[in-house]
Amino acid sequence: ADVERIGGVLLLAQMSSSGNLLNADYTDEVITTGRGSPSVIGFIGNGSSSEEVVALRAKVGESQMIWTPGVNLAVGDGDMGQRYGHPKEAVLAGSDAIIVGSGIHGADSRQEAAAEYARESFEALCEREGQ
Image (cartoon, rainbow, N blue to C red; front, top):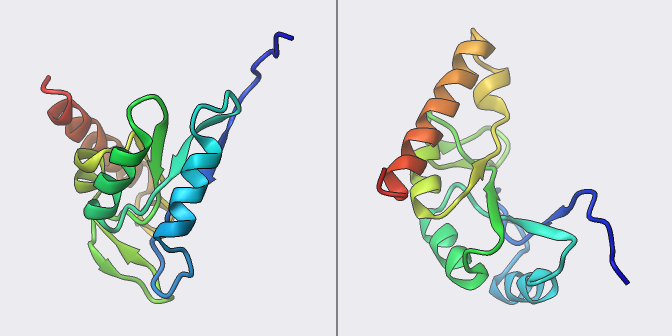
């Protein structure tokens, strides 16, 4: 039977917070579960580690998206165990979209911060695609 696709889900494959309990076996199981599913549009990866995003992209392939939290223009560790990588590095490693929290809501000008994250990620996407 034909199923009308209304939307989709992102499966959590990696986490950027320090001390998380996700390991490579978990990531592989999530990818196996979601690969090829018409309901899964992609996976959430670890934006704080470009190496992990590269590995996730290699396992996922190009047919599904990777979204990455754990990015911030101020790279490093947060106050509550967060780890941040630069949004450009996440996109160059294979992320299709970045998820930004504190980098925007903690900024003096949220509009300017959002515009800067958009610019950084778009420029990285153009660089990755050779445009």
